[in-house]
Length: 575
Ligand SMILES: [Fe+2]
Image (cartoon, rainbow, N blue to C red; front, side, top):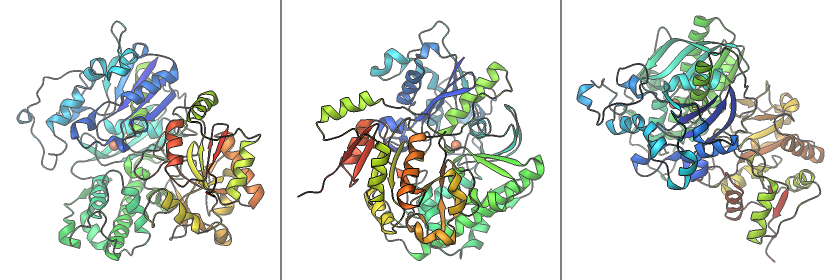
């Protein structure tokens, strides 16, 4: 039984294909359209279905839309309309007057937005782009069944159903869904029992977005910049943010209107200098967020009595919060969905409907890695290289030669195997470099056009992680920070953030043999089983998807070499 999951409601539109509980493929639409987060200048098209990602998922499985049994869409407009139970159609146009809009919810209750979601089934069956029409028409008699899935159910399932735990507490922390912005559940097998929720307009995610915008960054995409900036600040506005976020009993909280201009002075405009005040605001917000999430986790632990916690929702990408909950919180183990943002809801929605329709409590898939996107065979890569006429070669041992380049201080694009699902490059579409010299951080930030305060993150062999990073266990998705051990800190200065931590990726050979072997080969040359790993893209571009994207990135940035499939390209210095 095939189930196609779709996220298209807010941003990071994505698709995922599940067959009898197994995730066959998942990808974000931005990788194909090359429009980051799927955000277009015209609001309408924000809600376009992820046609290219759907097309990819079907191709990966060798099927067409006619073979799909269920389509699971990770937003249920009927919840917002006060009618539970996702019916497939609704009369248009929507009349706001017929449905009272609660105070503070105006942004959620946009008739245009709701109409586009309600119409999604029609778009998929009739409105597909002409070049994909042949594959995407639901041609079978009866076709697939369409399901609207509550946004936070999709988030929760994306974390719980693919986690190592069959019994766990599940927390979703998000900007917003239909009504909920934070939810608590108890998961058992493939069953989720909702224990409580916080609803709009109270939202930790939306507050973080507001402050991100106030600090002169792009909301709903630059939150990680605020997180990085926080390390440079002092928490002297803690009291103000404690006023804004008010904790309440029962896992609840209120977020009061932040009135940031009034409290902290005029907002920073993009491009204006970053002042200490801005760093202090970021730090204060971050600290109060950490304390708040810690409190919520404590409540959830008390309510469930379980040792395991699963987390998803955009706030789950805040690796400093995650580390704090892991370190100071009551749960023994935490698992965070790597695509914790909205893209992951495509996966969660598909797995939810799959389990419901097959009426099974058994799991068939565990997410041990995030390599769920397209791969490109050597023949296809070489055909492209030949066509371009670029000088390339097929080394006898790509891993050894790439390790030589890295040990020489070269910056290497690494394009291998299936693309990652989620916002992090994890060794399939990565830029790799040596962490041995501090200057490498500036060089990489320059290559990628990033702010100088942003850290670069390391990948480390799983079995070596604890020797280099204090308390580090298995952390394959770059979702937790750990302190760099003092005794080795001067060996890897490029990956040590100003606060002494690093957002690590651990890797074992089962997850990605060639990547693992490369780090081992680098360690054989330098004694250091650590590389810098950052995503293969340049400023404001989505991570590369195809060999063609990789070549474009290579030639429009100061990368020294590109290891693409079994081939190696190097830039030679000008005479
Ligand atoms: Fe979400």
